[in-house]
Image 1 (cartoon, rainbow, N blue to C red):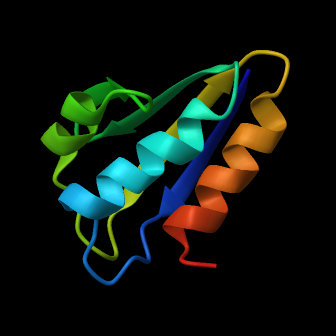
Image 2 (image 1 turned 180 degrees about the horizontal axis):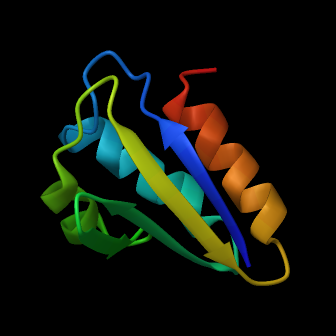
Length: 84
């Protein structure tokens, strides 16, 4: 299991379109991936879950992945959230 605290650097935060894009990134991996912020823990592959987070730029989120491609999953999610 890999856990990493990441600061959201997307200018618009995780509004509808960026949240949908993050779900697409997460869905490429077999690992179970969860994001946690302010006592909310959601499946990163669920668009409805992602929409409930309502994260803005500058907020931190804990990304947790568990599975055979967990390292790659966390790395790619970090790249996306840091707008790289």
